[in-house]
Image (cartoon, rainbow, N blue to C red; front, side):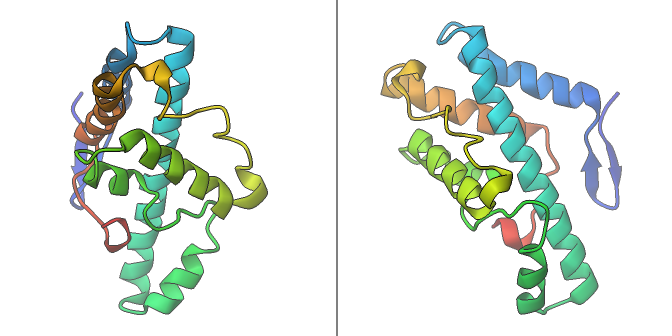
Length: 164
Protein backbone atom coordinates (compact mmCIF):
# COMPACT_ATOMS: atom_id res chain seq x y z
CA UNK A 1 0.00 0.00 0.00
CA UNK A 2 1.63 3.29 -1.04
CA UNK A 3 1.96 6.27 1.22
CA UNK A 4 -1.09 8.50 1.21
CA UNK A 5 -1.05 12.27 0.89
CA UNK A 6 -3.12 14.62 3.01
CA UNK A 7 -2.71 18.42 2.86
CA UNK A 8 0.61 18.06 0.99
CA UNK A 9 2.02 15.88 3.77
CA UNK A 10 2.88 12.31 2.89
CA UNK A 11 1.62 9.79 5.41
CA UNK A 12 4.13 6.98 5.69
CA UNK A 13 2.71 3.53 6.32
CA UNK A 14 4.27 0.52 8.05
CA UNK A 15 5.40 -1.04 4.77
CA UNK A 16 7.31 2.14 3.89
CA UNK A 17 9.00 2.11 7.29
CA UNK A 18 9.91 -1.57 6.96
CA UNK A 19 11.43 -0.99 3.52
CA UNK A 20 13.44 2.01 4.68
CA UNK A 21 14.82 0.15 7.70
CA UNK A 22 15.59 -2.96 5.63
CA UNK A 23 17.40 -0.88 3.00
CA UNK A 24 19.34 0.98 5.67
CA UNK A 25 20.33 -2.36 7.21
CA UNK A 26 21.70 -3.42 3.81
CA UNK A 27 24.28 -0.66 4.23
CA UNK A 28 25.81 -2.40 7.23
CA UNK A 29 25.44 -6.05 6.24
CA UNK A 30 28.87 -7.56 5.73
CA UNK A 31 30.59 -4.52 7.26
CA UNK A 32 29.65 -5.14 10.88
CA UNK A 33 27.71 -7.80 12.74
CA UNK A 34 23.91 -7.71 12.87
CA UNK A 35 23.86 -7.22 16.63
CA UNK A 36 25.98 -4.09 16.15
CA UNK A 37 24.36 -2.53 13.09
CA UNK A 38 20.95 -2.55 14.73
CA UNK A 39 22.28 0.11 17.10
CA UNK A 40 23.21 2.35 14.17
CA UNK A 41 19.86 1.83 12.44
CA UNK A 42 17.78 2.35 15.58
CA UNK A 43 19.75 5.49 16.44
CA UNK A 44 19.20 6.91 12.95
CA UNK A 45 15.51 5.98 13.09
CA UNK A 46 15.16 7.73 16.46
CA UNK A 47 16.91 10.83 15.10
CA UNK A 48 14.56 10.81 12.11
CA UNK A 49 11.55 10.47 14.43
CA UNK A 50 12.69 13.37 16.64
CA UNK A 51 13.31 15.52 13.58
CA UNK A 52 9.91 14.73 12.07
CA UNK A 53 8.03 15.45 15.31
CA UNK A 54 9.99 18.66 15.81
CA UNK A 55 9.35 19.79 12.22
CA UNK A 56 5.63 19.02 12.46
CA UNK A 57 5.25 20.91 15.73
CA UNK A 58 7.23 23.85 14.37
CA UNK A 59 5.03 24.00 11.28
CA UNK A 60 1.86 23.93 13.43
CA UNK A 61 3.14 26.83 15.53
CA UNK A 62 4.06 28.86 12.44
CA UNK A 63 0.58 28.25 11.07
CA UNK A 64 -1.00 29.19 14.40
CA UNK A 65 1.16 32.19 15.38
CA UNK A 66 2.43 33.41 12.03
CA UNK A 67 5.59 35.39 11.87
CA UNK A 68 6.42 35.63 15.58
CA UNK A 69 9.80 33.87 15.83
CA UNK A 70 10.37 34.73 19.49
CA UNK A 71 7.10 33.14 20.57
CA UNK A 72 7.62 30.11 18.34
CA UNK A 73 11.17 29.64 19.64
CA UNK A 74 9.97 29.91 23.25
CA UNK A 75 7.22 27.37 22.63
CA UNK A 76 9.59 24.98 20.83
CA UNK A 77 11.93 25.06 23.82
CA UNK A 78 9.07 23.63 25.91
CA UNK A 79 8.48 20.60 23.67
CA UNK A 80 8.95 17.05 24.92
CA UNK A 81 12.31 16.93 23.14
CA UNK A 82 14.44 19.86 22.04
CA UNK A 83 16.28 19.64 18.76
CA UNK A 84 19.24 22.04 18.68
CA UNK A 85 19.95 23.98 15.52
CA UNK A 86 22.16 21.97 13.19
CA UNK A 87 21.36 18.63 14.87
CA UNK A 88 18.30 17.49 12.93
CA UNK A 89 18.12 14.65 10.46
CA UNK A 90 17.45 17.30 7.81
CA UNK A 91 20.65 19.18 8.67
CA UNK A 92 22.63 15.95 8.37
CA UNK A 93 20.92 15.14 5.10
CA UNK A 94 21.85 18.50 3.60
CA UNK A 95 25.52 17.90 4.49
CA UNK A 96 25.68 14.21 3.54
CA UNK A 97 28.09 14.71 0.63
CA UNK A 98 30.60 16.64 2.71
CA UNK A 99 33.48 14.85 4.43
CA UNK A 100 33.08 13.98 8.10
CA UNK A 101 29.58 12.49 8.25
CA UNK A 102 30.47 10.21 11.15
CA UNK A 103 31.84 13.06 13.24
CA UNK A 104 28.91 15.31 12.28
CA UNK A 105 26.36 12.65 13.31
CA UNK A 106 28.18 12.07 16.61
CA UNK A 107 28.20 15.81 17.30
CA UNK A 108 24.48 16.10 16.49
CA UNK A 109 23.65 13.22 18.84
CA UNK A 110 25.76 14.76 21.61
CA UNK A 111 24.05 18.14 21.10
CA UNK A 112 20.64 16.45 21.35
CA UNK A 113 21.64 14.73 24.60
CA UNK A 114 22.92 18.00 26.03
CA UNK A 115 19.85 19.99 25.00
CA UNK A 116 17.48 17.47 26.56
CA UNK A 117 19.16 17.11 29.96
CA UNK A 118 18.16 14.05 31.93
CA UNK A 119 15.53 12.93 29.39
CA UNK A 120 18.20 11.68 26.97
CA UNK A 121 21.27 11.59 29.21
CA UNK A 122 23.75 8.95 27.96
CA UNK A 123 21.27 7.56 25.43
CA UNK A 124 23.82 7.79 22.63
CA UNK A 125 26.99 7.29 24.68
CA UNK A 126 27.69 3.79 23.32
CA UNK A 127 27.21 4.63 19.63
CA UNK A 128 29.67 6.37 17.36
CA UNK A 129 29.22 6.84 13.64
CA UNK A 130 32.88 7.87 13.48
CA UNK A 131 34.19 4.45 14.47
CA UNK A 132 36.63 2.14 12.70
CA UNK A 133 33.98 -0.58 13.11
CA UNK A 134 32.44 0.90 9.97
CA UNK A 135 35.63 0.27 8.01
CA UNK A 136 38.12 2.53 6.30
CA UNK A 137 37.16 6.05 5.21
CA UNK A 138 35.47 4.99 1.95
CA UNK A 139 33.37 2.32 3.72
CA UNK A 140 32.66 4.67 6.62
CA UNK A 141 31.43 7.37 4.22
CA UNK A 142 29.09 4.87 2.56
CA UNK A 143 27.92 3.54 5.94
CA UNK A 144 27.06 7.01 7.24
CA UNK A 145 25.62 8.46 4.02
CA UNK A 146 23.44 5.55 2.90
CA UNK A 147 21.10 5.34 5.93
CA UNK A 148 20.50 9.09 5.75
CA UNK A 149 19.72 8.87 2.04
CA UNK A 150 17.55 5.76 2.44
CA UNK A 151 15.47 7.24 5.25
CA UNK A 152 15.16 10.45 3.19
CA UNK A 153 13.73 8.52 0.27
CA UNK A 154 10.83 7.34 2.43
CA UNK A 155 9.76 10.66 3.91
CA UNK A 156 7.68 13.64 2.93
CA UNK A 157 9.81 16.00 0.92
CA UNK A 158 8.22 19.10 2.39
CA UNK A 159 10.49 21.25 4.54
CA UNK A 160 9.97 23.64 7.38
CA UNK A 161 11.74 26.89 8.20
CA UNK A 162 13.27 25.30 11.32
CA UNK A 163 14.72 22.41 9.35
CA UNK A 164 16.60 24.36 6.68
